[in-house]
Length: 118
Length: 111
Image (cartoon, rainbow over all chains, first blue to last red; front, top):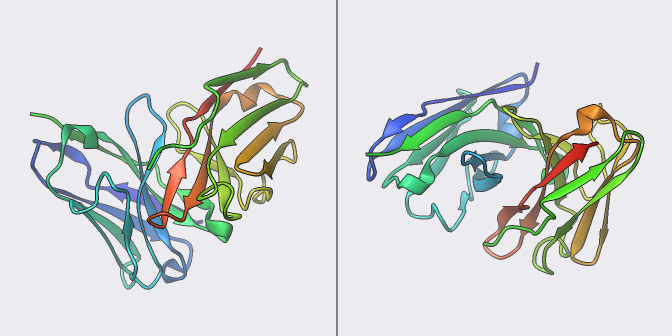
């Protein structure tokens, strides 16, 4: 079964750091670009970042550029999102998603919650 | 990076059709065939229902269809069923900054 499972969320103070993980199974992980998408409570999803299958060419939304770093370990079938200098407005449910044909996000995890608060 | 524009709500009775618009620009919706649509039920992750503007993933009912005219994409749900009541979001690749944009979202109510 094709699956994605996020972990690593939690409560962190403004200015703090957190690293999210996304464990993939059931497909050839290195063949796919991968995304991080976040959704604040009561709001719609917002794209955060993507990375190519070989780990090159990471791209970020303007709101997180310079603060977040996406990476992947294809040997461990795991995607990461390192989040530094966290702000209250980064509070959200963070999903990882697989980029399928025509870049539709065809597989999603259940999400991990990040709360930035003092 | 502004969100794509969708109407906040749409509704229809069972069996009727509803169409949701997604308005972007010539740098995103109007530029590439990388427009997708997602259905999201409360407390659940988004689910891909349309990709490549018009294509349906395996397992998605053919009641769901996508189209595009210029810089506006549309999702039509025909033969509305109660389980179609959900939030719907469009998404497009945007060639400024090689990024992705989601729409503002449309809540579909089945009357």
